[in-house]
Image (cartoon, rainbow, N blue to C red; front, top):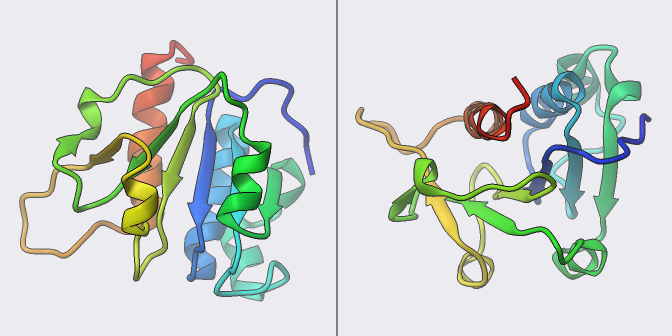
Length: 156
């Protein structure tokens, strides 16, 4: 796996459950040179064929760190950066978030989201939805936010 010297952003998935979502996000991270953090427990094995298929042959391009728990993740968190949470239940839109290079974008699991205790510790934002759906797909949400923030940071 590739090690990114100074990632523009860190994508953090809190207990992801669905292999294709994580594989798609891993591919996005490889394409945009973002660091991917997975917080266990995972709902799949990293050797899962669906995970590998959705990431195609890009897994060696992904800068991936797996953390045994949220507390383990926090031990490696670089304090000069910020953690921004994303939840469909947040009142503030992601477009109002201030983002800096190297910040950590934290997304919850597909069925449970982020625990209230975690959302209460950090600024939390949502993506607007106008239709009658419960939520957006996790990989879609990560893509929307990551690319908007990369644009704001002058990456493109």
